[in-house]
Image (cartoon, rainbow, N blue to C red; front, side, top):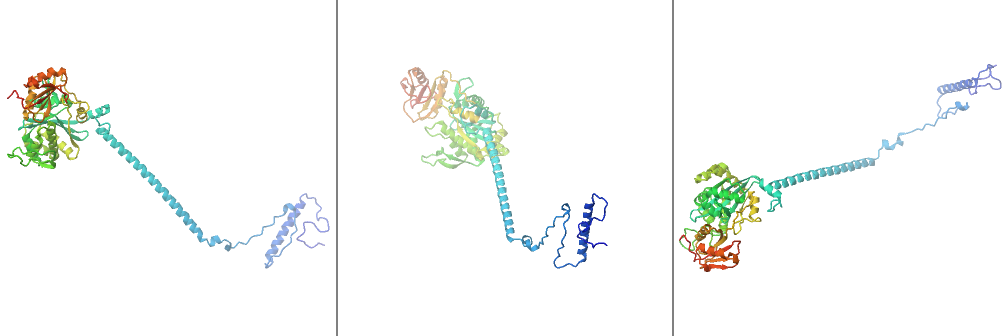
Length: 501
């Protein structure tokens, strides 16, 4: 009575109406779902119980409703490891590429690092050079050695820098006990710039004496003594001299012997004053690095050849001083002991200890090459010009040059051509006593007659008065050219007879 079971039925009996006559709005879907489930169940059962063939048999399947259909499964691909050769068998070239990239990267990094280090070194070097340059310029400015600032210009900054420097100054007078002459120099220790200087002062330097009259340095040393000369020098040079060192020639000889002789580049040969025969060997030879004993040093420091100006002898004295400082001990105690050994009678303002300590400091500068000797330029009338002497006065001494006012006094330049050295000094004394200003014109070749020269008609009366004061005949007065700045020029011949004779 029942038909056979058809697993592939779509949910309705073949050839007849549905088995159930009850109305069910969801019947069709329910039947379809049941039929689908039955179909899948039967299929799974068949697959589990049936043997696996070499090739799966195709089971046709009737399509259900469109919305209940399942998407056909994609065929599964069968992958094998041999298809991925780059995993199992890597290409050797890939390692070379990686190594090359690493090498390139490392080299680039090294180059960048080298550039950074080079830039750092350049920056550091630039900073160091800038600091060194700034420090050097600052030191030169502080020491007053900058070009344009240390010159003889009159810039305000220069004068201020030079004036604020600390200096210790003493004056030394060399007395020749045999020749009855003097030579004067200032010893300067600039403690700010650490430099030492010997300033040589010509005997013709015009000073103001104690009574207010104009005199010369040589005359001041003789008449006014150490105190008066020191004050006069302070007035003319604007300095502050702390003491006076009188150095007689016997003490200079002993001092050179105590330091163990000195070496001097001599500019002339000095005859031996003790020689009894002409043509004898000189006491001091001319040449470089001549070793001088005490006796030889005194002979060289006081030597003045016939016809030479006093400045030539003064410069030799300066050479001896600087050479002596180089040989003196730089230890203050040892230098003081050397000074005490001389047993000098020093000026009250300068003790053995003060002088020894001062000279030791200059000795240290002289040994280190920070020492020099300068000659103070003086005009023919003994005054200082703004361009010559004022430069050294301001730069070395830190002062201001102020030559004395000569009022209306007539200046007389005297050249000694008598052949007797002492006649210059005798003429100077006579002229100063007569109210004239004396100017040393040096020594000339010996001549028989004297001559008194004036430049213009207005000076004839003055020249006549000068000749009368010196005891010269009126015929010696003549109009002519005067090469100096003096009002009257005198040449003393052998007919000059000093009044003291």
